[in-house]
Image (tube, rainbow, N blue to C red; front, side, top):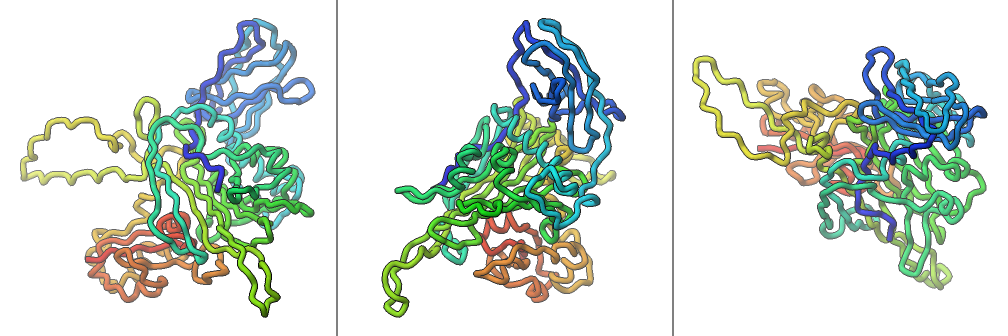
Length: 502
């Protein structure tokens, strides 16, 4: 059982109009170099003592409105990933007299992979230099998810699933899947952070155990920060190029809790994904695979959405001990898992423009031979739900979809090669495919290695690619750890290379 709502996070920028007699400041946030507007950035209004009194997020045009609680002297502060923090001169805000103030901030990218020192550990995110710098970047993105996911602003097609796994992580039966379309709010809503700090992340009830997955509100809350310690990490394998802020329950905390890592891009400082596992499960159940993952993506407006998520919950049973073991009822034993998750197949703006799709755009038709007259153009077709002709590529600031050509190698690309087998093709054209590594598994030591599937059947480890003749191959695809886990189940954390032959 889990608190896991079947909707997806969307980010909206609309706010309520300020009262006519309020003390407000309006303006636009722009890049001081390019002079272009900066959407999806937070601005705060602080009083003479430095206390925050109002907060707003810029619209797609960079516009903002801050409303003070009473007349007085305030300053506008801005913090956006990749830009220098800004504090305005003192502004006097009078009742019923709107103040215009535009903000230009300097682009100074913070390359986290150059300043983060792996292994720095603090139980106060504001003390250690490395931990503090990383948390400052992560907090802005999480706050944006929390702040702007309260009203629908994008149209989604969402694919959700539920599957049952055995104790070793193998699938049992068919997946249950369903589609949802329409304007959405958030994919899941956790319990209040205060409740989780007081009662823990897993509750035992009459109908089973309830698992709470942390949402953005929880992760930026004071109760979460006060009940966890933090450590900086440098990514490798699947997380190569990322830096992470790991968290573990504070010493002395005995409630069911979570530990995990928030990963960000080491060069751009953009939020990438959260991975976590449950600790101190009730009734002394030990299961390192209980946990989940949440993937984040930045939209063209500068706001953030959750575009993929997964949670894995163990099923435990109490079994009687043998006479040799002393008899009686033993401790609960994990007999399987329930895994739930989903992903956004398509995201559109309110105007119908496609901004994200897991289906690649159709390949352009080859140019006609100059000696052959081109055939007459067909009549215009009706609107296509998957038309992406107006989208040249992934929106600025977003991660590429799983359909990225780098994760696909077709026969056209290696036509005419003298390489003899699949292993040599991958080594020559996609060497990084062979470097994927996932977390170790206590039940399957090979789970963190890249695995090979031939025509949808499990084939073996990557060395068995040498047995597949290059001339037989139509296509090869790489599924990274999360996608491989979603398609083939647990114990595929190192990723899967799919081979399709003639």
